[in-house]
Length: 370
Image (cartoon, rainbow, N blue to C red; front, side):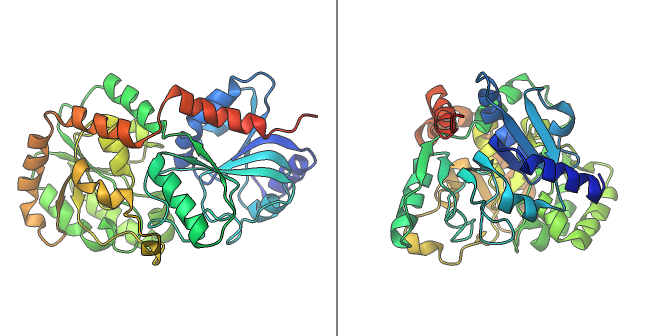
């Protein structure tokens, strides 16, 4: 789309007030909206607008007739500050902190999580300050947000006990998927300084090449965007080994359920793999992912730290020669793990039909009748 076409499209959008607007930075985030969009589309007469900044977003070609879908990239700052809507829903933290400002004519800004981690270590301190409502995945996030509001003198937001429906979707996909004939390891790191791709990827791939596993690397879209030169070098490493591949599929559904073992660092994908497929995780014990250097001010242990030992086992990046032994330990851990992790899931996540319905009810309550 040319700049002129986008300009025309954006100005046309700004001429009319919207009821519910979703904004997705990338096609990778559309899956986190899926349950809520489906439920809202089931409401008669509700009008939904979905804006994406990824020309490969699947909803650009597969959108339901009841939903308008627009691709906007160059004029996002202009659009954000002027859009008119009853409700705007995003998975993008730091609203109003950088380029993307609140519009004075949006009634309610809603944040939905694209990772089930805590709110205060892997996100910036002010990441959620300017949202009106947070759809929390579990009680731990509610406690963290309320503590931060008290500590930093913030007005209380609406907290919706919504859950993390992606886990339920993954369970369904996993139960229906045909497993690979060759055992498969999926490497899926996060993108912070000190992640697997920055610290030990070459050694990790070297040690994995000695095993009988097929190895698939699923990089983080933010890493690809921010470190293009480093990412190209990693692609070249993968290309040298016939049993290793880059994952180019659009979303986590297409790869995660069929992996036998997940290797990650501090990524929230560990939650999705363990709780969604019922399999343990092999963690590379990198440094913490700390977007907020002051996270200890809340005096609450982040759930991604406290649950780490329950989700699998760890190995130091300096001891990767022991990788075959650790892989064996993961496979030994598998019997009984599904039931164990299922009990943990029920304890910490809000997931239920009633919880999902509460999200729909809240959004509908914020739509102004004309």
